[in-house]
Every structure is written in C-alpha cells, then in structure tokens.
Length: 185
Image (tube, rainbow, N blue to C red; front, side):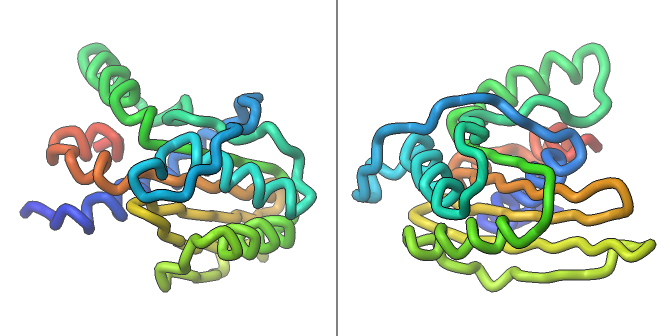
C-alpha cells in the first residue's frame, strides 16, 4: 500500500529524526549568514539560520547545527550501503539538524524561539513515559514547506535533545524503495 505524498514526507522526517536520536550528530558547522524571508528563498541556509538564532536565544552552544543529512543510520551492507550513500547525498540539501546532551528546558526555550521566527506547531506535541522513570518528548513544527521534528529523550544515562528540519518536497519524491532504505527495512 502506498502512502500519500504528505504522509510519506512527515513519516520519513520522523524516522530520520529518530535515527538522529539513536545515531547522534554534532558537526561544527558555522551558522549561516543568510536570513531571507521570501518563500522562494526559504532553503537550507535560511532554515539553518533560523535554528542557529533560536539556539543562541535559548543560551545553547552555537555552531552545532549540521546542514546535510546526519551521518549514521541503519545497518546495511554491500549494495544497500552504496544505494544509501547515493540517497543521503541527494537528501543532504534538504536537511538541517542539531543535537545536544542535557536537560529538556533549553529545548523548550529553543522551540519558543522558533515559534517567534514563524515556525508553527503542527499539532504533534507529546510527552510519554519511556520506562524506568524516563520520558520521551516529541514536537513537530512547519514553516514554508519544511517540517521540523524536535525530540527529547531522558533515560537513566541518556538525556538528549535533537532537532531535524526536512524539506517536504524533497522527501515527498522518495520512492517506496528509497523510503524503505532510509527506514532501514
């Protein structure tokens, strides 16, 4: 059964954000300087600038955003590794991510800063227990054809926040086979 284009984009973005939570990321890419506001100019550099500005306003360490698909992923071998590498290269212009270890409160401030920059809650905002006293929080925001998924996971030894913004049109073009590859099926 095929999923809808919008459903596939949101689902893939959520899977990709989950992969970042498990695999982590942490490039030292410098903040982007561009801050255009027209829809045509709302691309990866502007998304990264929005995220960097919200990170700075939240008092979080700057320069930790990563433009491009984060490294790490599913366990694939042989031909699938090559196919995944080609797919990651193609998706890289469509992704901006950030992660940080620590308490959830700075993530809440970051999300508030993103709202001030025009990111709108997509109505997906949940917190649930994750066993042994931990919690798992997730929230989804949208702006000009991009979907941003924020996660915070707190367990006994893990306290990590991740944010991944993905361009909807880019991920909507994935075939079912490519989607399965990204998901690690």
